Image (cartoon, rainbow, N blue to C red):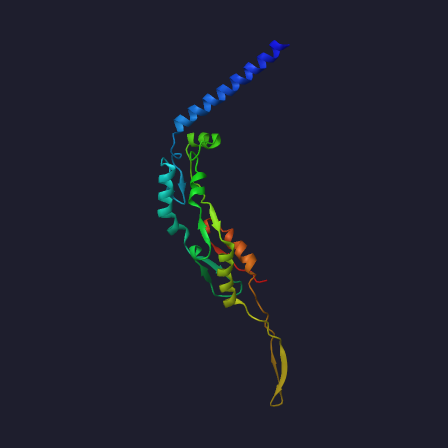
Length: 193
């Protein structure tokens, strides 16, 4: 019996050693740089070090993701916009670079880096309080109180005025919709509560 157990230990140790050698080989081949062909919103970060990629993204991403997000209240010809950087929306550059294959010694990242990479989505950061404050400013401009219909007499004639429904923007739901916009670049339909 001891011999039998010893074989399993040797087989397990050999398998673990082979896996370690395979990982180390992949790490050496992939290098310490990010995977070739990796981009974030079209910004090339492949074959850069983590620090270089963070510097490139810090310089180029703000202009790409700071495009105003348009908010359209239904049945209203007006459109309102919020600028992401002024509304609590930003990109976590370090976390974005960490998502690029080859950014870490994690075995999955290393093996993904061997085969190159393509587009990587930026990691958003949402300051909920600032976003709701920006949406509340728009709500103040679009909210209307309901008006009751009326019937009256003027110079012996019946005069009517139609009822007008009120409208109010649900700030929390609209903030959820804006925060869910991929890469902060879209048009959001604002639904009244």
